[in-house]
Length: 229
Image (cartoon, rainbow, N blue to C red; front, side, top):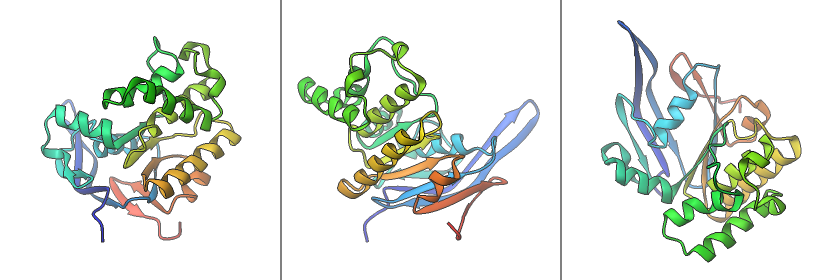
């Protein structure tokens, strides 16, 4: 059996507010294999986004380890983590985090260029990614010239353009209409099948969560598998 694309062991996170310590979550174990899709659901403030940040190496847990593609990111320096994220991980957040000075195509090209892809090839792949999300005609527009849903589609194209091993998504369809949300799900399914990308999705959308292969609930600081999903 192949190694997990994502493996977390014994993750714990505590925040200090003045003299008090608040445990957000503890003892988190998770494995996601190539081509799998999972959802993490939970109440606001339950720590879903902070868990996603730790799984992607954007933040550190207080205890435990995270491996992506068999590499322990817990022991990596910042430079090594950045290179691994650019190569193997795509991120989609509820707020798009696009670079305002660049147009849609240039924003989607960015992870490819950072990874050393030739500029012409990066542009071609970026345009194809935008077209797959119905954004072919908006490639020359800057984020300020686009609607919230259009910006989110660009952010999704940027996350998927490298065909990464792992995509981490925080409320990916929150700003999208039903038709576009369906297109996003179609692309996720396509990548899971063609390049075995694994998806971890934090969402309040029960319908979206229900279409994932496994659903976990983050409750009282613990991650529990919903066996009825």
